[in-house]
Length: 391
Ligand code: PLP
Image (cartoon, rainbow, N blue to C red; front, side, top):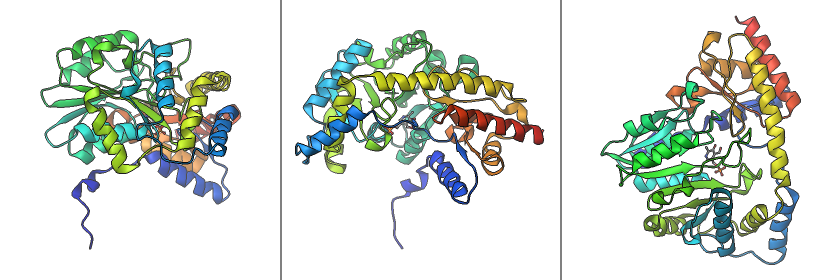
């Protein structure tokens, strides 16, 4: 018998992958499945980005790169943060990562241990809680409420900080709700944090370029007073439809940077070299493909929310970012997980039950509109027929 350390008993999972596996299995059995469960754009990476990777490979960029990423890419990221958020971030604080997720892994392992509290959004990306529990720290959920458009309330978040809090995690635009926290709340949070100088903040801004109605994403990187405690998580996965490339970046306080560099050296050495060249092309090249993707997401967003609001006993607030709708299904008579699973098995529609994103996700299901408009509308129609039949 082997004896891995007990921490592994606490490690969670991302149910979206299990739903995807079940949906694929049903499809392989010949069932007509519409997948609204998956959290990745249904677009291809724009051609000029793919070409940049191919060119890098042809040019012989086959070796290790610095663990923190190639210097040119870190400079380009710093320039992008300046251009979009007015942030003055030195490339020396920027780390290129194999995807956005690794930043949360490192941040939570740097701070998490028994006796420590870590605050995280609920409903929220399931890996936050999973990793917090893995480290033995206490997970403290910060509720995202429908009546606030699923934005966090700065007052509520600040009221949960105690002398044991070491890290708080925020995520706007939010997965799974599509909520975007307004600038006023973020200003208030930053001001309140002045009373807690030993609390670090990780801002997951992976959907920062995916906002609607002309709304500007407010990045925590634009607050110089957070310089010595901000961990910024972002990347290319969603903005440029590059989930499989595994390319992300993060910003770290100077005092943590070398720890993180060493974690990289001790684990993956560096990020895939060709992907880093693709990352440069993505930021410095034309943005029209990324912009066109957002126009398409916007059309689908309006259509899916309108269609959901026509369903019996379902209501859905208009999400302001990301590519998820998070309808309230409390009035349907179903628990959210049961509804989600029966929709897959009986109506051929894959969604994710809200409780997979935390206790405050009960009463909701997540629909990703990373699918064609035709399929999305067909899926909602099937949901309607299912709910009529099971009223
Ligand atoms: N953060 C949030 C909120 C996400 O939804 C995701 C992916 O679904 C990630 C981070 C991870 O991004 P990546 O694929 O770049 O690791």
